[in-house]
Image 1 (spheres, rainbow, N blue to C red):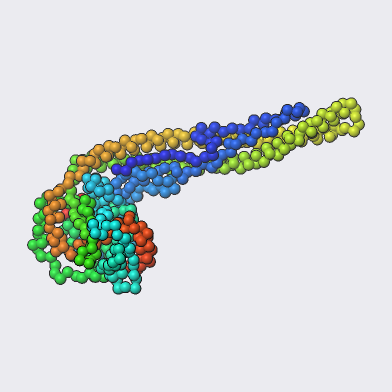
Image 2 (tube, rainbow, N blue to C red; image 1 turned 60 degrees about the vertical axis):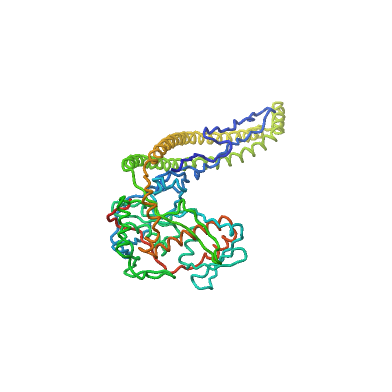
Length: 545
């Protein structure tokens, strides 16, 4: 499971921290009638606005239930329940299976496997399942070390537009755009899962909520990979090619099989599946190295996708699910707390903004006052001289002049004292709000500690959830023609996807410049046929686990 890594940070001016240790001017230098007047020291604790972009919230991965730290600006709530819509106007059929196209698509599938360990992780096989290709192809000894260039020639016939140059030799492998473009986009991404039946939705008891990698959504290849995922659920019916409104949709280079699979082939597969009551699998290439080479003047790709079968430890599953409910509830409570804290931070920023505005006015007044203080020595000398002459009954000195000078100095002092009192009032307001925010921080820290503890518990339980079924996995691996005979169109699409995805990942890693140039060349290619992939599939027996 993913680990929590949360830091609660407010970005403030250097003089402002959680303890709000501000410094305020003490109106030093307001001594009148003497010569020890000093400039007023401006407080440098003028506040910066509190930023909230890094105030963390937790979101639940729709598949794993794991927590991830995200910015508060993208806090997401757990999906609310909604009623299922009536039958959609559009649908696909595969034999007796009806696959519905809803106007609102499910979230995209953005998951990455982590090699062999993923096959023992319930959060992967049990909550993603589906189709997953992660291999990076390896060149053979003769090809290794040679420069490889990819190019796309849109003027060529569809199916012959990809050029692969290995050293000084150029090859033109046969792959149509409806396969080439989404596979390249798939390889470019950081995600390895292609399709899944296990999206979240309001009625998972009666529907599968289908999710796709972004490259495969609304594409014929996405439809082929989805059928590969459900092919074993009922081979008698799922062996048929999908029909959209009663019509089979084929891509360039595809042909309808000459004949339907015979009962012997279907019964052989059914016996394999029923022998161990298999209801859980992943179509993957994990632990199945891919390669490419040049043989007899031909460019060749090799990949070995297979179905990995597993069963569930039901007792541990129940324990895990109960613990997961507590975990999700706590994450939900945490997010509510984050939201309320954000509101308080916004409340906090309003007086901070006012403080900054008043602080600017205060600074201007202090500057003006200090300029007056600088000249006050002469003014005080003048004042004291006038006082002496006035006291000596010097007719040239009027009391009005003395009163005017004294009033100006007193006015300066009064204005600065007023500003100082206002700033101190604002500081008290900020102290009050900040104390609440500190309390929020402590409460969120406690939440995080409890979430970490629950994550550890879930990890310990998860280690016993998955029981591999190696006998069935190897039995089907050893009969590759069995699936080809049942649905050759789907199997070919699966192999093409696994092979080219692994090859493109090699190019991406080892020849990044040619890879970027190739991606640019295919960026605006229109893929035909244009299709809408299904979003829902009603659950029928046997239910896929």
